[in-house]
Length: 282
Image (cartoon, rainbow, N blue to C red):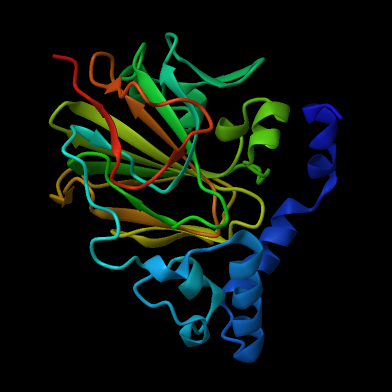
């Protein structure tokens, strides 16, 4: 079966309604039912609870509390690198931005302007730069950390669709990551600006940042923006910056000449928070 045919049912599903329903359940504190669902989830996806700060499944009051669980201290040491992996997951794609176009999968790309919600001036800062698209599977740790130190300047919530973001869908849905709902976080770092885009998906109940809390819901159906230039919000490399309440994808943008990826990076490779992602070209 072709990838495009495989994703056809997603065009027909009531994705917004399913996501709202899943979000309501994930927030619910349903006692034994919640514990049973978490126990099933851990077994079904092979979640490593030994890494969790709290490995006791029965102690989580809601599915969201379990899903966004912190790790034990020291579980993810940080590499001595200019840029580190900000999440646990797998490399979907990475490499050079061709003028303003980001490679998604064979036969598919999308523009930086579309990704950041239509701001051409912001997108222009990453012309011929570098990108990395990182996929978080259900079993992964779902907090997102800083790849390098940075000062927050803007956050943009871009409304959109809620397709799945798994590899099959990435190959089958054109412009997927610039099509789905997303939260665009803009930073200034020592090497220049960089962007971290948290991409929503079917069943992703919401996305949150450490400075704002839950960004969505609400979903008003229009672009929303917050400015932080004068607030002095600085985050160290490796510091938590956000989380997914149910999993999805992070897309990062860096300016030209900023990032040289490590030689062992390749699509589909499993990655862990804190591993070296690359360095600044010398």
